[in-house]
Image (cartoon, rainbow, N blue to C red; front, side, top):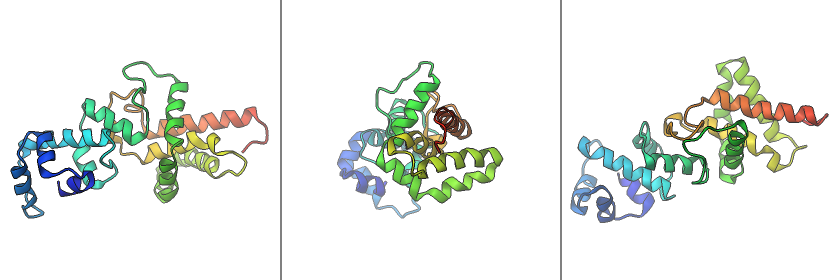
Length: 209
């Protein structure tokens, strides 16, 4: 609770209004010992408020304390929060069949953001750890890493690879099922789709690596 308030800058009164409680109640909770428990009846409202704050861009979804609140929560606010986390626009297709090209377009949107690219680079060891899941996992991840680190490709040509690798690092429980395709497909399939995109592209342009 204290971390949420510090990160958003909300006063106890402002946060209390969001969840339907008085500022005095919030202040009383903040005075509890670290292991003091907030009554469970208020947790849904607190989760919903955190989702709304993430969707507004006022709360970092990567914070462990925030993720512990958001996991397994599905709602309209959850949809917006997940879009914010992935870096997709609010107009991303909702409730409709999604084609391969639309999926690649979504990965491109994710990978075009410098913070997402930086996250992939900084957490390269976490990405590489997924190679232990099997030979095909290793092959797909290696293909995408080779794209990211290639000196023969310009940055825009690497966006889909960055997007797929960032998706791999995104907690799956944070992506509601009502985000078409992204909420239902697993990391392995996303990696395969992105890797096959580059494989086909390289075949079209001989000598391209």
